[in-house]
Length: 431
Image (cartoon, rainbow, N blue to C red; front, side, top):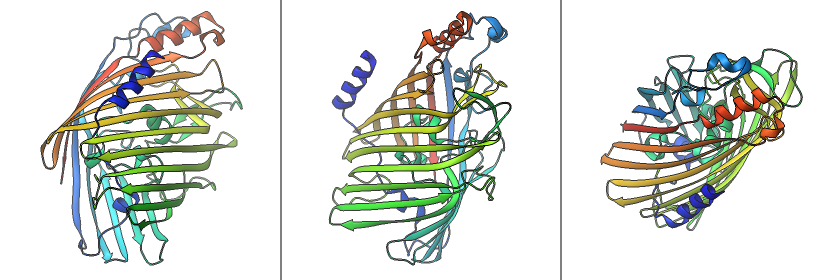
């Protein structure tokens, strides 16, 4: 409680600085005079170190994992050690008009080391075409970001001030496809296996969307029908479709525009779908609400997200090669507060506090995660920046007395106490 109170006080007291925009417009459309072809891309070499020791003190069936790093203390996507230097993202793409003012396209390929490429070294992350013929109802079709959380929509190379996403966005919105490896339990958890890389907040589908200006106000909406399947497969893997909708209202300060425009915005969104698991079909619902403010050197953002139905908790025990723990009728929720301050022309300080509560329907499985991130950005060239983050990370076993066996209770608390802080240094260069 003391840490939560401190984070809220710091959030309200600190000066702020980041990146507001209408991402539906910026990522889905081209100006009529912008040309037919524009090559773009970015590189993000990243060093990550997690200050943790190999776990000790595990008992019973988990004792063979003593002396190893848990999953949370390994750097992804390879999960080999607690420190790693790698190209976190390496993307190149093209965008432009097919029929100026009417039809445009957006394409992007990923060759970096992250959840998207965890099973394939090269992945198409975006491949869409937008049609601008119907007043008030633009249509975008293909592979692109779902209209969900602001953290999911933001352009990571131009406007995301941190190295890693919040716990709640990572766990609820980056989806990897799973399949059952045994019996399916209607309550509690079932065992499964991950069979795909991460979604990168994207899916194949069709979206109807648009935005409308009224003086300094702008209103936007998006409604998308998508597969809810692996992003490297154009076809769906079942007959179920996801429906995702988002509404946003923004007050724009002056005539600012682009990925870093100055505005005050609020939004609400919901994703409703189903997933096949074992012999059954289960809900996968995600929804959220949020707001942001950016003007001059100041920025503040807050979002609340929740999940219902399919909740993936990761390997159990939390070591590579172990079965994935999946709740089919579970719930999870979380939120983050973040702020930034551009205190000099080329320097920015950032602070984020995020909270995630997982598997809340089963007392013995519930876990809470809190992370406080202190960051600094140095914009030393117009298209290059250096980002340094330090994350104080904590995990809590919410209801230890609900875990009956003494060995299991000891193991759960040992794993939670072993979670280490994370420091990361990332350079972003884009063209």
